[in-house]
Amino acid sequence: MNKQNSPRLAVALHYNEEVDEAPRIVASGQGTIAEKIIEKAEKAGVMVKEDPQLAKALVNLEVGQAIPPQLYSVIAEILAFVYQMDNYNRKTIKNKG
Image (cartoon, rainbow, N blue to C red; front, side, top):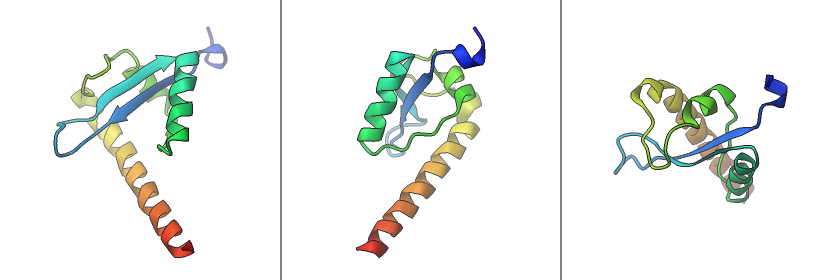
């Protein structure tokens, strides 16, 4: 199967810095399940970051499992991006109000 025909992958992470040592997998799947994960995230206003290579590395982990240490730097970059976008969105909404 080539990349164009590969099923879409999705992995949802949750991180509570007060409780967790590392982000944990809260949902994972491919194909229809991946589409539902993405749809639910978007409906809930959760930032969706597409990274097929990272999703491929994470999709085989168990739900509830913390991400492995070798992926910390990649996840940290994504979390930094998400926090920046969240702060930007809050400022934009505040300035419009």
